[in-house]
Length: 236
Length: 252
Image (cartoon, rainbow over the protein chains, first blue to last red):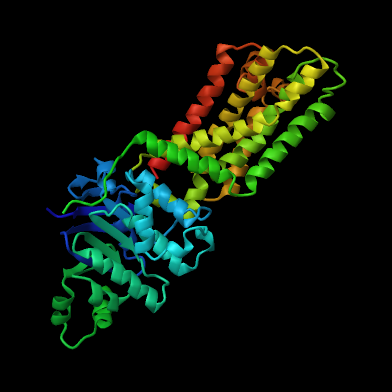
């Protein structure tokens, strides 16, 4: 069974068709690099998959649960970090993760928060309020709330945006360490990230899927071209 | 492989967590202390200086409660502005609604937390009761009834504020629109507007319009009368506000 499944998802805002007939399917162990220019519909697709937006047409399933029909079951199996990794700024990192873990219904909140703080290297700033953190730490807080319940499905919207090269490496390391047990979708603008981390590339432009294949076969289709040249070719 | 973390989804637990976070959230910013100070400073000074509370020589609190619709019209939107607008601005609405909680759990937790906060402000004025008890022999039942009425009146204003907060991502806009809406309900039923309306409308309509005013509904409480009509009025405005704002967030 596919852990993430979208069938003919469409969503319009007014007259703008943000997502058009998007279908995709992600199995356990896959890491999908979700690519596309700004405004292509990446974030909207992720919001539809996470159940934040309702599609005009089509449906999305997380671990077999329809996001619109059984939202609580679907959401409890999903870790989602929206673009910009929002968090309650006035809370400390620990309070925020405690809150997330409680709403997630975790049984042993204290232990799990400690584990997650350690996993995401946040223990040093656990007592600091989120507002006072640097961008790198903030992004990790967003990541931490998404993995605190060790979900089967992870959807991360630009988790490495604004990070320095070391921090990017760190996020990739954590992601890679848990990827084989999960189905992951990561949106990104960093093409080298795709080659380093992803088992499959889904490229979206003007709300439609342009390609859905392994990085290897994509590169093989355009011999002698680099990833950024292929990206430009497919999206303009 | 199954996830290694045990889940215990319990609606009450999530509700309590949201309630606690929201209530304590007020005290994380200076807003709470400003709010509590302003509420009590105005509540007491209006009663003493404008309402001639002391000179009236009567040991009751109706001169104190008479200004409460004004206070709530201003301060309930101040406390309620952050309910949804702040979630929108910070982008946390997207987190909250993709966690396994329902919109209703979140909305109810937020609303009750804000109402409890208003109740805290009101509770701080309890020394007024000691003052009148020391000066005379007030009817404590009547005073309790007045406090109940005031709290319900605050809840009705909060319902309006919740709707205004669900409309926007700006707390300022939420506050201003909330204040205007409540302000209309305050001036309805005051002499000035009645006179103005009776120039345009037949008399029976004027008195019908006055019935939707806040003071007209609070007054019986301050006299110690627990009427069905004002009770229903306040509770239905509060619930309608809560329901409407929740639907608006659900249909975002």
